[in-house]
Image 1: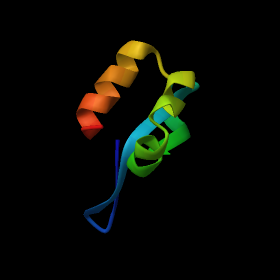
Image 2: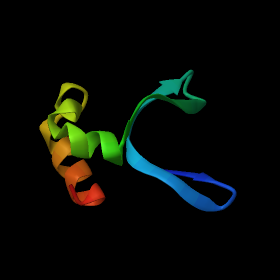
Image 3: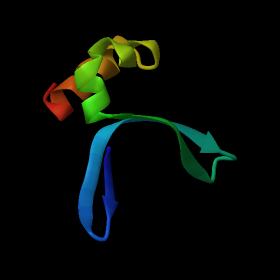
Image 4: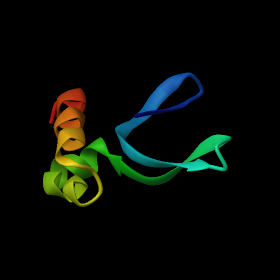
Length: 61
């Protein structure tokens, strides 16, 4: 996930989203790329292994 403000990227990471009443999504947990670099196994508590592998590839961890 990329977080942007004023048309430029300010953060990159992985997020856990929840569907709200089938109308929209809310981010319930965000892991910055820096946080994942510091403790890569942290995401394994929140994402299945296949998602962890995809996140690592996408963020080049």
